[in-house]
Each structure stands twice: as C-alpha cells, then as structure tokens.
Image (tube, helix red, strand yellow):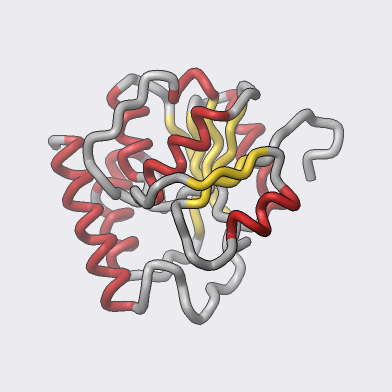
Length: 187
C-alpha cells in the first residue's frame, strides 16, 4: 500500500495489558509505552514523534482498512486534515456526534480516528479536554483555521468485543467525550 513512499510505523501503547508493546516492537519503527492517559493524548504523542510531513493515524486492531490509506493521503492536496469517515457508524452516540458537531465540521464520522494530517497542523496542539476519543484534535485544527475534509469508506465488520466496552458503556463514554467536545468548541 505504501510501496515507493518513505514511511515509519509508530505504535504508542497507552499502558495496555494485552501485550501490544511486545508485539509492536517486532513490526514498528518506534514502539513506545506511555502512562495511561487515553486515546487522544496517545494519538498526539505519536504524531509529535513522527519525522515525515504526512501523518496517518489508524488503530492497530485493523478495524480500519490500511489499504484505504492512499485515498486519504491524496486528499491532503486539498485539505490540512482528512478524516476517513465510515459509511456505517455503529453506535448511537457516534451517530449523534456526527449529526451534531460533525455536521458543523462537514464530517460524517466525527469520532473516526482514521485520519491524515499535514505535520505542521499539529505543531502547536495543547490538549485540555481530557479523553475525547480524538475529537479535540479536530477541534484544534478547526480553531486554527485548517481545512478539514473527508473521504467516505465502507468499514470492515466490527469485532464482537470492542476495546471501549459493551454497548451501554461505550455509548456513555462517547457521549461524555461529545459533551467535552461541545465545551471545548463553544458553539
């Protein structure tokens, strides 16, 4: 998928207990463990370590198809940040976020962290919202006047036991992140 392009793979393990770091050390150019602070800080931490001018964030569990990477990278010709928006959004809370705050950003899948960034867009990011499942990264980009675009894609089937918990727990955590995003964005 990235044959002919220089790239590096950075894996940030947020102190998980599932052996991620040990496996990542075999495949990644940089594999690092940091204190548990949530996905948003983990994403930013990894992005700040990147040495190339284009950064793609993707979950290591392959719920995002890596084959789609070139499509979002190509859109960086038009935008500073490109979101790979799933055409099927699984959770009620994610659908609500996409119909509200996502709509104001022009993004169908607001909580998708399958994204491409121009490195200069993240140079001055200072997080203040705690865990927002990556939402704050888009908010900061918008507040800094960066152009945000999207590419729609059909996601692979979800696994039976997602990382952030069952349906009720996951929806509550995402709703909490949505409220934080509203507070940060200040509509």
